[in-house]
Length: 466
Image 1 (cartoon, rainbow, N blue to C red):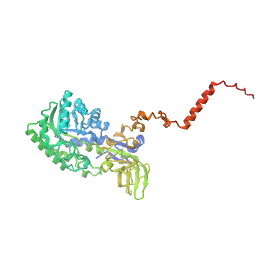
Image 2: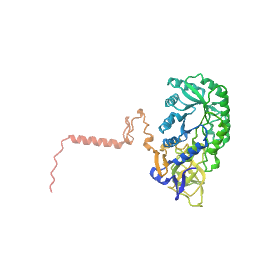
Image 3: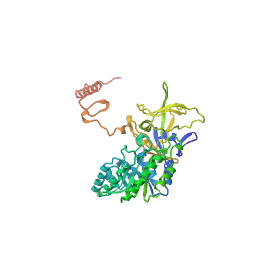
Image 4: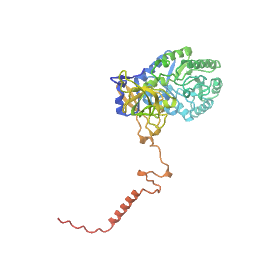
């Protein structure tokens, strides 16, 4: 459920008409609903009731500080995968004691920053990283609390670019190596290993892969404990999928997911950590765009909008589906037609939908790409020197810009021309001996002539007579 609904003939975000936001902020822009964020978090937390559970929102899904702050006020921690995300989470008010630092390639600088901040734990993903963490911890006079991320070799049955739990994926250590690395950790004074972590992928629409991975993790914990290792926590990652086509039956509910967790780990006497991302923020956001042209091609009709793949890359990158709604509510029973919805970037891949049945659209109409709150703005770029979309957060009848649209000049303000090319001047004139245009030479000559004329004694003027 979300809070984007038609009212009085147009689409609203909670109590704010999207057309009003479009007039104020221009298009394209992202709009997030606080009520949806709050509801999704509470539903997820309720599904885990009765467990010693810590919910750490996966910041990579949506790193806007306004969104992070909204979730932090509800009690959410954060799962971060970079030093930048760590800084964002702390700036948004997430307590470091509720932050998990994940990621397959943490730098030593990032490890040191995490230790200085006092994060809850660092998820170690390889033997070299374990050794590096020990060295960094000792060099900073600290002891790192860590969990070992294992690769359970479970196929999440999702898109191949977002599956992370198979043996051929780069994430975690082979689960059969856990015993050896736990023994190694005992020889490292800078590391206190207290748990295991798993994460098998994103947008998972079937509970079976979760069950397979959970059972493997549970059995591994039993074996590690029987070897005398301390296991206080199990990080079960995230990955629960959501319906992008509006059909609630196409994805497991948080309640069904929670029931599975309780079935497998109900007897575990420790903390369970969860890293939901998309399931909390996906349906809480939309991308609003304006129709530039309706172009009739030889065999297809193209609706060209002012949003592009630099604003929302999921369709180009993953062939992802996003429902598209007009902001003005279509009349009941209106006929639809199949169109291709495309952006203005000079690539065929800049296509949001192909052969999509939509009500009639015309130049100037507003449309929304639904379920865009996850992996939307956070993956945007300035490709084609296009300023990424602004971001707006709504709460009831209030709306506030939580990320301004950058100016075009700001996109290249930190770039420069190398010294050997000379310093550009207005009009293209170079400060490197390049000949100036003829027009400029004529102006300079005229100025010199005038200057010479002022040095000569001028003839007395004749007095004019009437």
